[in-house]
Image (cartoon, rainbow, N blue to C red; front, side):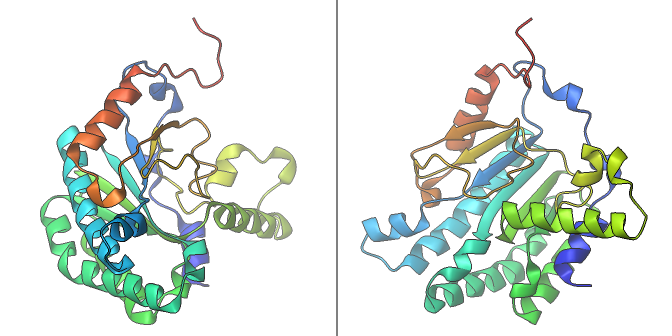
Length: 260
């Protein structure tokens, strides 16, 4: 079984699931914040620097975002770091990005562990080199007991690919007689997603001023609040997260129901 299919089948602990009824309280802080980290290349270009400089500075913004999420009491933080479409970028940029990923895994995991952060990775790991896959697994295992912040990094991730993978899992279960399609429920489908056992995001933030999801958590974001910020990701800091949380607090979430 591939690393990708193993992730989809195994999922995470079911006790991480959250009752959807607790999500509808107006003004309640988000349990799960997801961020589309956009703007590294433009940040570098605006300064006459190579794109890798923007990615390096973006990695520093990741640390600030994690620290701010802990400070603000966010329990779940998911960061869109590398999409399945990013593999189409020039080979030199892919080399820079995977090099930065190696560096992050070797220098930051000890701090995550010390700060009570649990790391999970979602996406198609099979496209990465074996040493990166090994380090990703080691990082997850070494932080598995932490509970202060659940940090999920989306790497080689695509929402459509994830939904297709879940459909294949269910199709195989139906073929083998382990699932009756006539009585299949939404929860059966979500168990096949990379995010199985995780709460859906309450708030999705995208930086750089772009206003689209870009194939990120398409199923899970059905009722998420969306906040678009003009800041480029390398400039993102605690104040930007605080602004997004304040905007979230002003929203009235009804999940399709009529106003009371």
